[in-house]
Length: 247
Image 1: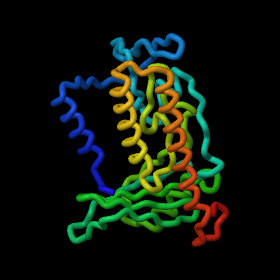
Image 2 (image 1 turned 90 degrees about the horizontal axis):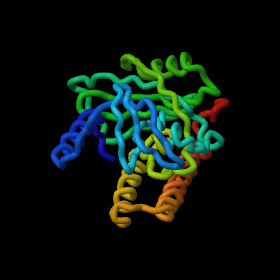
Image 3 (image 1 turned 90 degrees about the vertical axis):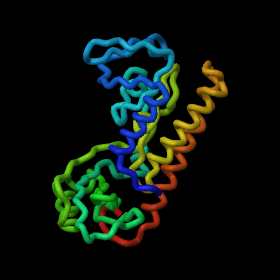
Image 4 (image 1 turned 180 degrees about the horizontal axis):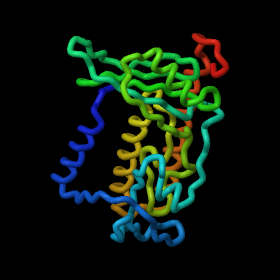
């Protein structure tokens, strides 16, 4: 996989979108006007009302439209994937420090730790289960094994997916539709698949998608999420390196 700086990638994608005539407006959604299983408009915190025929929910873990306004049920994967938090702390790369052209995944006492090398810094994070270790003890273990780590932050998440990704005139992509822990970079893979299938579906429907198309999309994406859950669970089931309560 390519190791791409997220900030630079987003800046490039926004530039490219503007070149294609896309209008980009930053704002925070405060509430939405809903009619049945359709969103009519969203109201931003500054009072602006944004009307549209079709909405793509890319609001991350908050899932403002799909999980919030539409109230779509969430299917929890915690019976298979126990981790629900990560402590993340990068450090600046030394001038003579080689760049590892791969992602490292190491077993920890209560989960696993990634290392992703970039041009100017190293990104390091410990994915763990809060049912087996406190945030403080997880960070202490992380820093013992990574003494160069800088300022840290704790990210809380839940592994699972919404029952449907496409409801009415709302389609959720990325973390708004679901999330599994970052082992194997699955979030990037499924996001690319979501965007491509959504674009192809809208083209095939000539911009007027119906219920059958939405049902087919939901069935396909639901199967992909479940397959990834099973694939990641295999990593835990057959690990024999450590003997701790988590493992």
